[in-house]
Length: 303
Image (cartoon, rainbow, N blue to C red; front, side, top):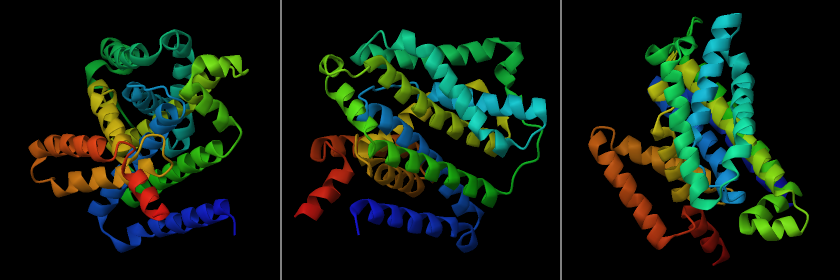
């Protein structure tokens, strides 16, 4: 049995096990599972862009917000089930990334990172000041709320598709172009890699997944407002998960999500300590395991 077949088999078995969770646990654990799966989707998207393409973006919140607003506005306008509009939420976020790519990719390194952070804040301010998008009050979904076990399954489906897309992409010839751009853009260009196209395509795919995650948030809450939809916490949580798990590692987003959610659950009675312990965890990982927790597992297997 090949390694690829084993990985696919383990993924399917894990998916079936997770799908049974609503039959085994109550709503509280379903909510926790939803949060973990949503965070895993964002971590997969960011790891693809930063870990494999080398573009460290802090604009995750911008695309989460775009996806959330796209779903809420289109669901109200067309009176369609919000779950059917998740691909549209991702498409709007990807279109936003495509429009912004010529500007943001004129910069590199730290300038690109800071530029994407400013971008998220600029879009949030735009939403606040345009009455079309509800201003500070936001948008309320007119459709009925879904039972939470359906929300959990929806989040599981989104995370599974995101993981499958990343798995297939990183095992295709396109992954060589991503890694070439990450390692040295100038050398990649000399070797015939169309650097701008590669970065734009990866940026759009990452934005698409973030937009779908934002659409999930809109369905869950039933109301979207700019300060929450475009909040910096989306970016902070996503970056923390990937750094803890392992940047540029296939299993890094999964390990990071499990640790991050478990830490938040242990400290749910003391939210003021969550940020401090998360920061301490990040420092320990950076100091003791710079490649993340996934690298420790690989090292043990080799040993």
